[in-house]
Amino acid sequence: MGRHKQPEIRDRILDACVDHALAHGLPDRLEPFAAASGTSARMLIYHFGTRDALLRETLRRARQRQRDFFGDLVSPRSDEPYLSTLRRAWQVMTGPDGRPYLSMFGRLRESAGQRLWPDFRREATTDWLQPFEDGMRSIGRPELGTLVLAVVRGLIMDLDATGDTGRADQAFDDFLAALTFVTTPPGHVVPAEPGADTPAAGAGTERPA
Image 1 (cartoon, rainbow, N blue to C red):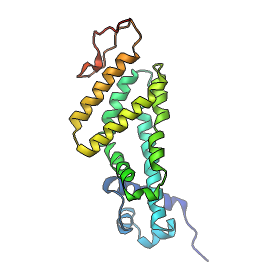
Image 2 (spheres, rainbow, N blue to C red; image 1 turned 90 degrees about the horizontal axis):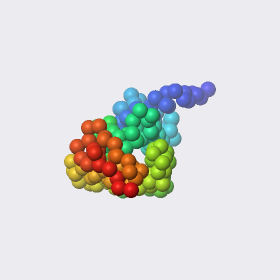
Image 3 (cartoon, one colour; image 1 turned 60 degrees about the vertical axis):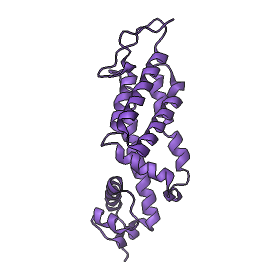
Image 4 (cartoon, rainbow, N blue to C red; image 1 turned 120 degrees about the horizontal axis):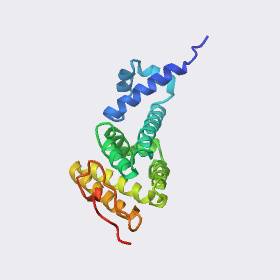
């Protein structure tokens, strides 16, 4: 009688492979995944069929984790101005908790790993659009979601290529300063952003009618 596959074991192995891939990148061989999950290469093949199938599932589960994590970060909150939410989201995305995702999918976008996910470029361009549109809708400008997405993606690519965190952070604060001005109704005082070091706070600035 053949052995029945156990979904809970497969799920545990996949989570361990995702943890390893986020910390070290996708391996060229199965042995690092086997060591990380406490099993053998033979058992990985048993549960997932082929190496490429395991890599695909690892990428997709990592992407789902990222969507859940980043999606929560950019969701509007009733107790926080949305541009403050964006500032905090940027800091977390590009900080220690978010950078493993940016590194993994930045490499996928530019490498032969795309054979594992042929439509990744298109999906990676659009899958964050709805969350940003929803966030900007909370301040009455959902159409600016595309602009926010483009700036975030561009600065993340810059940061990945140069490692210049200070310059990228300053550019994002400058963007928020401009966004604050654009989204403040004429005749209203631009609200101060707690903890802002740049004109993004707009303290005391009145937008002309």
